[in-house]
Amino acid sequence: MSVVAATGPKLPGAIREPRLKRLYEYWCSVRGGRRMPARRDIDPLDFPYVLGNLMLIEVRRDPLRFWVRLHGTEMVARARYDLTHKFLDELPISEFRDYTIARCRELVAAPQPMWVEHDRELDGRIFRYQALWLPLSDDDSTVAMLMCALFYDDARAPRAL
Image 1: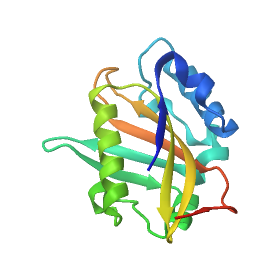
Image 2: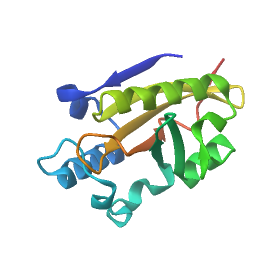
Image 3: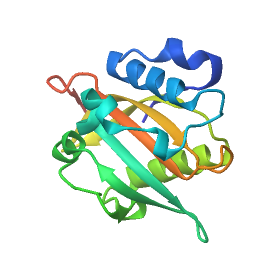
Image 4: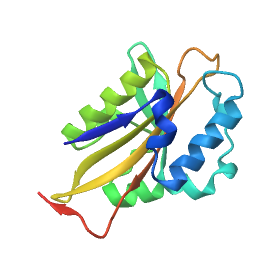
């Protein structure tokens, strides 16, 4: 699986998907001068263009685990499973589960927005997607939640394995 990622100053220029760009700009606007906005700063009514492609993942500690508060309907339809109100370690595809948990651990350890382009196997075919990971914090230090929006580049023309 090839992965391309961008953080820091390279992030805004890396995002090609317009809805992800718009969500990143929203996240920046609600955080103000802080490193990260809090969940209470985020209003889903402000970004209806991304809701079906959004995951909200609660960060639980002792031990560190990731609980999915929301798994967007478009993501559920594509993956053919719903992780809402489940832990990420219940994700049925082991390779993608390991990748996703590692990404979450990375964002908790070094909180910053991250854009990712990645290949994913679904139904025996490889699909390319873009995802934007955005950390949320109640105290501007500890990540309490991760918001991830994901869009497939071309759902009609998957590449064969």
